[in-house]
Amino acid sequence: MPAGHAGGRPRARTTPTRAADARLRQGIPLLTGATVTELLGHARLSGVRVRHRDGRTAVLPCDTVVFTGDFVPDHELARRGGLTLDTGTLGPAVDGSLRTSRPGVFAVGSVLHPVESAATAAREGAHVAGAVLETLAGAEHPEGVPLSVGPPLRWIVPNRVTPAESGLPYILRTTAPLTRPLLQVTQDGRTLHRQRLARALPYRPLVLSARWTRLVDPEGGPVRVTLGDR
Picture (cartoon, rainbow, N blue to C red):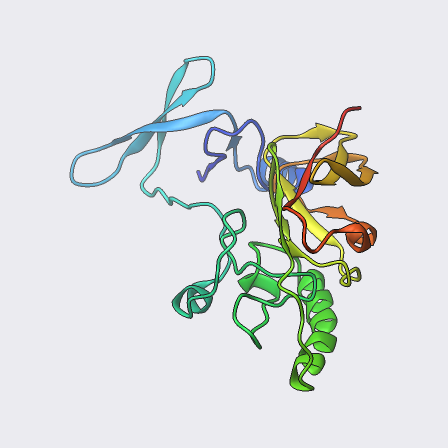
């Protein structure tokens, strides 16, 4: 029987509905808080040993194990092209108009960030069209200032910001579940924006309004998004 494994995490990375469907309708057990510690068998695989968070171990008979890594953007061309990559997303660093570090090169969709919906990619594609036309017409744009996040927030897109760019919402991810988190945007000790969210779950997009970008000092220091005091 197939089994799913959440890599030691306390919850599945899929949606609760899909996790329940796997367990109830398809009969696939999904283990959370468990780690594969040993592959068993001689000449061919016969099972795996898993260790639960409380120290208990168990052997699961099987003849195949599939290992997967974390989701990353489709950034091969960006990396080979020498574009500056964001340390959080591992995709190209972009400003609010989705310009990369190379003039005339833009990034949207799966090259920009890992595992977002087709609707997100379509929205970014529609948004970037205006900036592309402006660039073709010879317009110049400031480099902007870096934008980063503090833990448990994991990354943010776009990850550079200029005051003139305020149309595209910012997408964030968190590494931990949060109840009614308060996002706080600051620059050089100034609070630019505060926004309360209903909840935040790992591997689910969080959306931050871009209304605050007009307050950014283009000559100032990096902009930071952190969790504010409740």
